[in-house]
Every structure is written in structure tokens, then in C-alpha cells.
Image (cartoon, rainbow, N blue to C red; front, side):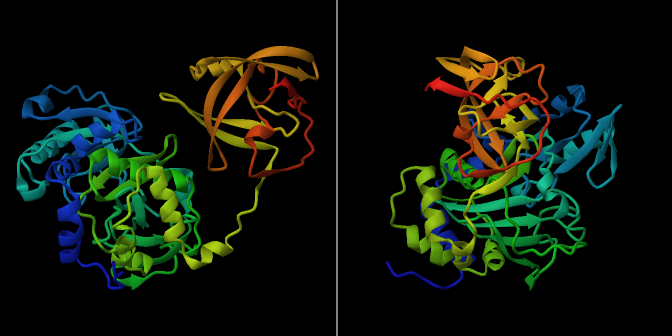
Length: 435
């Protein structure tokens, strides 16, 4: 098949990709944020938790408004272009403060939800549903590059393959919304490395983040492979062949899906200074069986030229480093000690109970400074310097030590540990006798 070098237009998008690859049933799900959320939850894909749903005016009148003090978001199920969404940063005594500083009483919120139900924000102004979801608290990584609002990442996925991505940064001009029509920044991203390239706003090239001296190019996004895999898994779960998946980085959960779009816009091409049609043509006749294979292919086919020059050597970390631990129901950040003297990572047994870790059948035999002992083990997933690590850790009483976790050399592949003077007696100097 000949590969086109022309920019993908709306008519070509509809005729070549949306019509043949997006079934009507899948489009109906994607057009309904509430139905999308339910399918994501059923498939175990991370998305902001659902707090309440409203189908009728009676549902609104009967609601007790017992909501999280740290905030929440109200959304129409079939909203268009971000219309009808209100994000609150606090809620107390029946009064909420939005992320832009406005205040709403319960009566005002009820009136807003009535408007949603009447279809004021929906496609074709048809009657709608409303829902409340937990507030996304943006990962601290974005504090320096997001002057206001919540940045998100749009990934275009075609038949399991992420083909193009951009970071959308809200501005004061866009009223804190990641809406490109209003003036948010669209920043292209290299699929191989997760490093930003060029940026535009209303068809103008932008070289610096507004109200900042930070360049738009050269920003390396964390959790990049997780983001691409989540986008592909979402497209697969909803059943669309061609989709735009919007992902945010939550401070506690990491990458989470906000929504999926069955008719994604085409300004992503401006942000990347590249043709979407060219990339779609390259993979249209390929049979990619799984999202994981799709991500691997994308990072090979669509890498920017500079990606070969990006350093891929080991990351250097200090001895003490923060770790994010995730289970199905719990998120916790702790400081851990990176100990190359230990083969296996270990965690405090009391913390293991708090995290509700399931004890494995395998018992390991450990020698340490205090002698030799058998220890139980448990499976644990944690993030170290943005890298997801799935490990089998040993459990031991560390209540008398400063750090509740030791990360051993089995989990430190790809890292170099910078020696430091440390007087804390946390090093176990342990190794497994039988592995």
C-alpha cells in the first residue's frame, strides 16, 4: 500500500478510519463518559472513582451531598468539548470552591445538574445523565509546567498501536482547561522516549511554557510506557479501532484514563509537525494481536530522529529514595533504602499488613548481620524513579529501623546507586542463601 505524506483531514479521517474501524455500538459507549467509566472499571483499568450518578431530578433532590473535602468533579455523561464539567478543589459545609476559585452552594450545583439532565451540554442537546467522580490531584511533576488547571495526554491509538501523542497544557487564556480551541498548548511527544518536541497554540509555534522560562521541548514525561500501554488497553476494552485516549497523571494512582474519543481531533498533527495519515498508512494492513505488541511497534516505527541520541544508560540514584507502592485499593509513598548488599527487597511486616499483601507460599532463607532466618515473601508492585517494578519481597520486622523498606539488587537493574555517608543502621547486609 502506498504511504501518503499528506496531512490527515476530517473527511479522510471519517471515511478511512472512523467509518470502517469504529462500530456504532463502540461509538455509543465512547460518547457516554459514564458507560466508558463502567467498562474501564470492569476491565481493571485505572480511572477516577465514581462517587455518584444522577439519572432524574429526583436523584438530585434526594442526594445528601456528603462529598470529599479535598474536592471532586461534576460531569455530563455525553458532554462535548469540556462543556458542563466543574472541578472542585474543596468542599465544606455545603459550599464548594472550584479550581478557578469560584464558589458554589448546593442549590447552585443542583441547578447545574438539572441543566445537564436537560441536555444543555450534550451532543445534539438530548437529555443526559450526570455523575460525580473523585478529583484528580495532578502529579507534582507538572507543577512547573502547568500554570493553571490540569494537563492531560492525548494518545491516538489505531488497532492497538499508539500512532501519535501530545501533551495538552491549560493556560489562563484557556481558563484552566486543556481545550485547544480556547488556547491551551498542544505539545508533541516522541513515542519512543516520552520527550516533548514542538508546541503550538492556535496555529502558532510556542517555545516556552506561559509565565515560565521553561522550554516546551525536551520535557521527559514520567510513566511513559505505562501511559502508552494504558491507552492501547483502553482502546481495546471499549472496542474502537481508531480512538483518542485522554490520560492524566494522578499524584496517587499514576496514569488514569479520563475519557476516550471516537472522533479525535486532528490538531495533534500540528503539535508533532507530522502527518497522522502517514503513520496510519504504515500499520493499516498489520495484524497486531495485543496492546503490549502495539506499544513495542509504535516505539520502533515512530521514534523521532533525536531518540537515538537520548542517553539510555543507567539512572544514578542516592541511597535513600522515595518509592510509590500500589495495591488494588491502597496507595502509599515511603522512603526506602537502596541496598546493593541485599539480593532481595524486603519490607516491614507491619507495613505489609497495612498494605494487605497476600503472603506467598515461598519461604526464603536469609543470612544477615543478626544471623540466619527463614522469611515469608509477598508479591509487591512499586515505582522507583518512574520505573514500575513487580517484585517478590521478604517480610521482616523493621519497626526499630528508620526506613520500612530495603530495595535489593534484584530490583535495581538499570540503576546505579551513588555511595553516601550514612550512619543509620538500616543496611541489612543480607543475601539469600537459597534462591
